[in-house]
Length: 297
Image 1: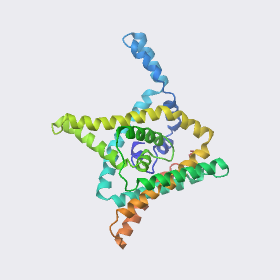
Image 2: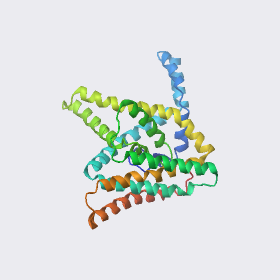
Image 3: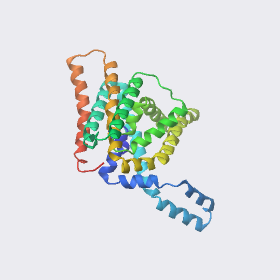
Image 4: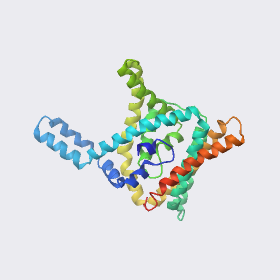
């Protein structure tokens, strides 16, 4: 899930479907109850510890901890690769993103329906919102203030647990993908440098603040929206997926503009490489779809 959500267009929610844990994941997240923390006040007593353990097991917290550890590990590793790709071959990387997002929209198209006014409205709003936001995002300089990053974290985590939409896709749409992949890389490097004596504590704390704010935003978003997502998918599944697919189609404006802006000259070679990168991205999604063709979103 972490590897999938590190690249725009591939959904961690889809990976959860493949492995058969999606319903358990959503139920576990929606079942988290902060009131369980009250047992910590009695943790020095045997009864208090037993009550805490029972509550954690009832909320399926061990499952979430193990899964979350895997997600975080993959995010750290894959985001470093994507950050290097963006700095080394930005146009080709965005062509790859285009293929990922476009193919994901095609794969999910069978779940789209505009048979009712509500679904038509969901489609128009999703496409229009993404088209406008991605147009503003392309080539723009965005604020990385802590309040902005907090909201970004909340939106990102919500997308991560939706089928068909990745957290990286939302970061890309919000203009924070480059920045946050870079921050995560620097933070991990600084932690290693602190151990070896090649980094200062102050530099690590500055980066840790940014990571922590995004993480807290993600936690708040997770606890706040998991129930909403479960309700939307169970009550208005087709309208919700129609909105998500339309969002992805509208957002294709961003990688197109990035490719055009970062390609100095067009030649048969650059055209071929651009099409190849997009094809590789699309192919990755289509291959993945072979394993999810029988699954119901």
